[in-house]
Image (tube, rainbow, N blue to C red):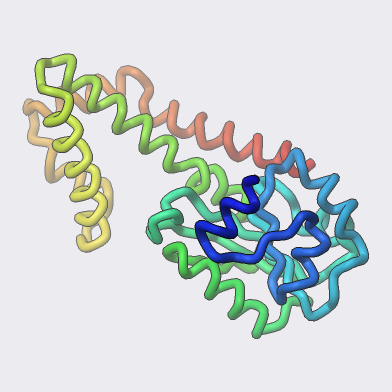
Length: 229
């Protein structure tokens, strides 16, 4: 029923098995949970043609694991993030040495439709990107949620609080992009001695805000490594 819905809604071809789908394309995208990787690789092993590129967005799954499990050496590993759904994502990706320049162009083009794409020549950066940009939207969502709740707590109507906080986040992000100043300089521009911002930042420092962010990113990075082990 789900396949029929997708076919009707998006006018795409649907298959009842991964092997059927695999036979139709030059690029095979693995967009599954890490927990399902072993069974999918068992289904596809030895079935891929050398001209086919495997593009994996599976969190934590190492290239070597994919190459061995699929018996295939033309593999790209990428880490996109959820803003890709609206064309505002960023994807960090790398490729095996066997991947051709044309296949790299295919991968860059596909990932580029979802926002920015950044190629790296060392796979070690993928798990780091997973912890920063892959999981990062959740950090931002939690921060926004917390500031909105705090704004409501001091008396602002929720709708007004959400508009204020969202525009502040968006405006600050664009300001960072367009400014030639460092993040520390931009922060100091808003922070007058003895003022309201300094009072707020002092409270964040007392609570170990920066250290908590560091520990959160490290936890995500370590978990990405565990998923690939």
